[in-house]
Length: 373
Length: 131
Image 1: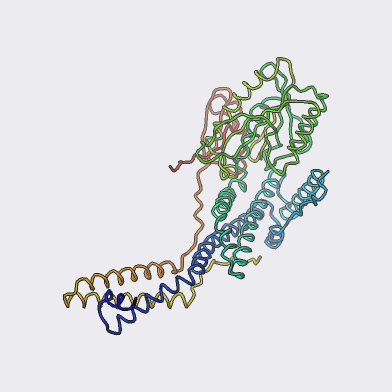
Image 2: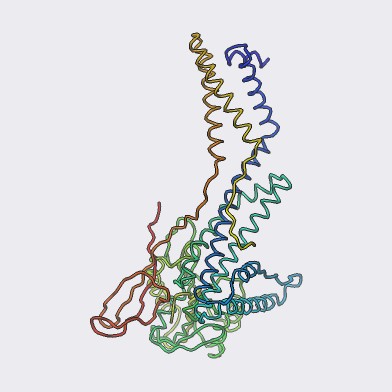
């Protein structure tokens, strides 16, 4: 029934019209039975494009890491092989069947990883000084993450192709835009980290650095510094990771030590950190809250929470909002300007939440790359 | 991971290419047929064939355009980062491009106005927000 109608539309009964009719019929039949498979191939092609881009980003990370090691570390042998081995490093999460004590197991693993990374960098770049070693370590970590993104996406891409599973490919296609955003942010932040420029994540550290300017500092475990600063009529212990090399320190240990040195007589703790903004919020917005404002694997947050609970110390948070991309890229002017706003907010919180003569802790959290003290 | 950085390649399936070329050929024939129908005074059939040929041609041309080898490049925009060196005593400021080794609160050269030691007051980049 259909053929005469199509024939009429096609305008003739000659051979060409017949071919056209058959082609159109085939077109419908193919779409009816193979529509999903065609959809799968379209998705695979899209993923292929992103995968190629991820590969470029991964190669760029590797290239920059090798270049910087050669420039700063002056190694006697080519560091490429060693860098390639480094990019394949992994950490096995501790067993959580019995979760009691898992924080300490995780902390131990992170410590081992930290030491191992530092030693690797020292072997690869023997001439690099302490600051350069830390920056190189950060550079290699970014390159490692880019390599990991590429390999995971490639894994699911190949798996989807092998199993011809629309659902594997579909899941990958759905999360890919978010992965690409993070990967692009990491790649654009590479230059900042290799050059030792302050990054958005260092907003909290910059607040602390500004507050402790001109006062005597002492080192405190681990990789942190503290200064005793007269602040709004109170005694403030201002803490940050030791800069200017790329370092986040262990503020959990530092805060715990200060609290114990003062036998728990701390009236308030104010923690300042960069906070990932929601879409629609402005970069550099300052917000207040309560709780231990600190990211990472959670070990430091756990330690702070345990200690403040023991001594019943209130913890307040001041956050500087920024995009995930801003946090790993060179610090934006808006974030730099927000530091002064954050200091004003800290002053207000201190005046309202403590009495004159009290001892307080102000902890600036974040990577202190490019920020001295 | 190999030491050589591989260039990303795009592979085109021969079957896919054949389908595109057949569609292209059929579309060309349909367009030719449309002209013949117009000549014969059958504008209704001519319009149908023109629509079929035109859409087939556009679709296959688009698919062919998509399969062409694209050179992938890293388009990471680098925004200039500036360092501000300031004198705490007289307020003199010197803004220049970031140099490797700069960090906030690093001691810098003496102030040209009052000879007091200056220090790096800020390092940041300015971003033009896209709306």
